Length: 132
Image (cartoon, rainbow, N blue to C red; front, side, top):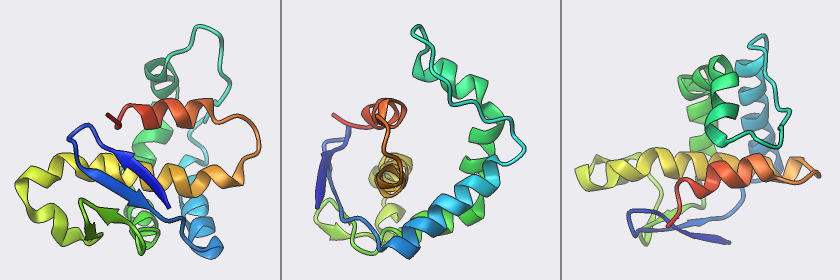
């Protein structure tokens, strides 16, 4: 189980989803990026912001996709947020809503990371934006 401390101070525990669930998330993300001109080349002077901006269409497609959201939620079966099993109801509390997108991003990153052998510089940098 992977453990994270969110910027809010709340703890997040992620247990990676089964392979089929992780693959469904991977495919949902690829479908949203297809045709968006995704460019994952990293230059020495690139920042997370510059990488996101050069891939803004793909990012917006992924972030606004109901299919991607559902695939991430499927990966949350064994996720624990602030000592509570993950459910959407946890984020009905106004004070928890600020952790919704960081939680979903971290779950997505950790479930697609194992599919890639090369260094995870981009994923690590995106992930660090949500952690304390």
